[in-house]
Image 1 (cartoon, rainbow, N blue to C red):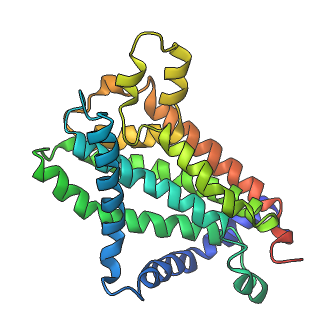
Image 2 (tube, helix red, strand yellow; image 1 turned 135 degrees about the vertical axis):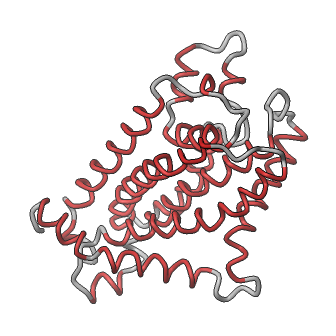
Length: 271
């Protein structure tokens, strides 16, 4: 195993491979489907439609939430970015053993490239999100520029968690069977389909519950994107010091996940 600074240098030297690998994976993902890359947008939109019917119509979570459809679609798109990055990271090593055993390269390139692939897919889908926002009367504003730092912090967080899960998945492949249930539970407490601010303001909800839900990393990044894109989503609905919280989660997951993955570098592909 190389030293940590040397490992960082090796990974940076493979940056072109990481980008090309992510782009190739994205292109090949729907190559067998007749609609091809349209599914990159159709999948999250279909999920949003199902959630709108169940939560917005049947359960009434749309009541009191301005611009609920842009609110919901933004949440689904941003959550899908995190969910897909973690699921892909879980299988990054165990699903690429042929590549790991055949070539010498820093293995962290794999979970990072999968997280980059999901970022590329999100950016591709953003065109549909913009159309939805404009169709429902959400105006273009200068706050849309906040998308860049918000997605950057979320990408660092996703890549860090993907590296943690890649190491765990390399040792115990069965984790990939458990993760869908963990991620589904995480989604339900992240305010994807409902407003954390409005639900936790009800009488009898302890402040600590509101704080835990609001500082949940998935909810933080979703709220930042909603604040950037949706004019009716105000700063008062964000947790205190939200940018510091978002940066803290990115730093903790990014640096911690990278070191955790690096410590097992020599074990990947063996056994």
